[in-house]
Amino acid sequence: MKILILAPHVDDAELGLGATIAKLGVENNHEIVVRTFSYVYDKQDLLGEFVDSMDVLNVTDRHWYNFPTRHFVERRQDILDAMIKLRDAENPDVVYTPCSADTHQDHKVIYEESVRAFKRCTILGYEIPRNAFKFVPQLFEKLFYTDVERKWEALKCYESQLGRLYFNKDFIFGLAHVRGVQANTVLAESFEVIQMIK
Image (cartoon, rainbow, N blue to C red; front, side, top):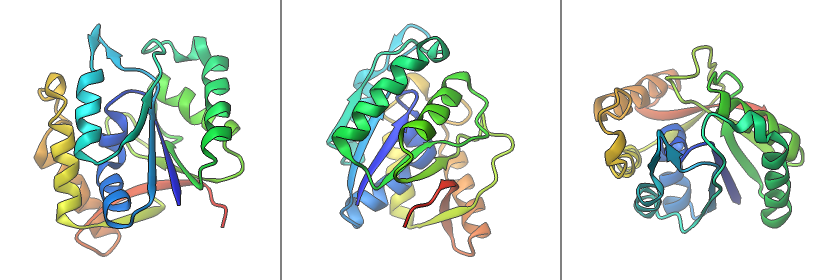
């Protein structure tokens, strides 16, 4: 399958489904495409950290746009146009996007416009816990320890973000354990089923 991951900001794909990326790309040989819509955060250019993180996850098909952080709503039509071009160029089977419960203003735009742009394929919403207070897990990806460890190794590439509470190995593994228990397994990441096309 071709799997397209839409990340509002450069660290969102790794935080939301880094272990799933590791599992699906490396172990199951699906084609992984990552597109991030902003790489500047609080005037810091995180592009180099993003590239290093994608290298850890073995994602070679990665690209970035430079929409201004926290101002996606003002560029909504441009973002939709970019997604439509992306849809036509990549023709993905599955799209991962922020979940509908995400409260961050940029994440909401990416969610809303992805639902408009990718009506022809399966769309799954990933969880960013600091923003998604009402997230309801519906689909679980069972993981191995090595998948979650690779997620953490990818996140460590964001040296500028390591002081944040959610950039913490205990938190990353803790959430994977919680989702694993819910799925009757050891470790998992969970997703919202926005649209399923089989």
